[in-house]
View 1 (cartoon, rainbow, N blue to C red):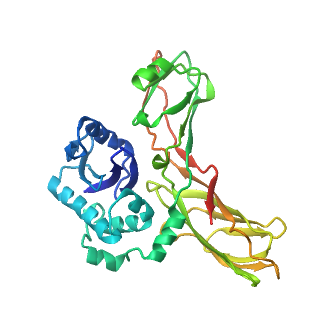
View 2: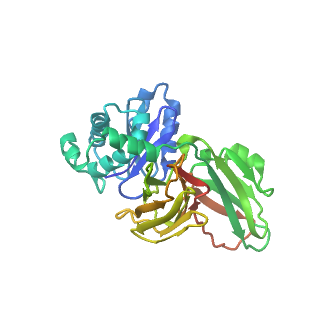
View 3: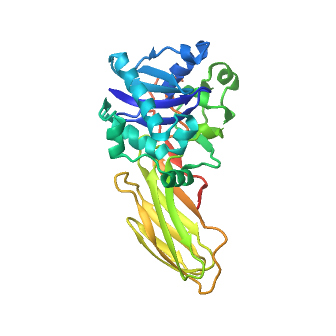
Length: 372
């Protein structure tokens, strides 16, 4: 019944999304944003908004819009009552339901939402039952979640690369489901900028072969959804020749897509002589000369998260390192643009033949660093 849930603040930023059945692009919220702009007050946004393929049902509480996405007609009060139950559950779990608190406890939030719906239908909605399944955050758990979930800085550098092999002089137009995402954009010279300014449509006569149609930049912190998380426990003790090392990597916001090609590297302190580690999957190496640890994880299975743990042999008599090492990640996600950008359609004019059209999305890690 309920396919997706989006949490939107009063500024119109989506700061959390959860999908139960099929993955629904966040561009569907554009219809909600239009209604939000028309409403004079937040409370005046219509609770039910029909779109060409979905219905958006929402409640507004604690300065947050809880927007449910459904694809078939259902009793609206049934969905709205469920949304109120979600808010009440968050309030019961965390003491207060607010955007900062939800972000600080994002792991528990996803666990609770996963239990509350089963294949889109309400399952466990009573707090006392949920607390038996998922323990409320303790001070220790809150600290751990804050350490592993707090983002210092994040940005997206996106590009659209084209490969065109068409005869004649085809005139192409490319439109997006959510062009509002594209603010800081650089175009190929073939793009007619005036049409983009007026209609947010890319109109161009392409050169032959491979070329970069456009590049874009998203720097707003609340628009960058971090797709992976790292839990870590790295400890050195004074006057001890041993240290503990443990890290776990898991998916965070991947729209159900698989994270693959995961490689974890870390430059260990000079005092580390060797490391005796056991990976739950993949292979690892440690170079005692350069002090570089490398772990080739491969794909992440959400049902069995990969971990690497063991001990570190430290130089006798060496003082405790001033700071823990940083962890660097490489990964890629096929058929996902983490920015949320999605192509709507590509049309050709000026030629009579029918071209083959295809699009491939890809997310790659840039400089992804976790401070321990």
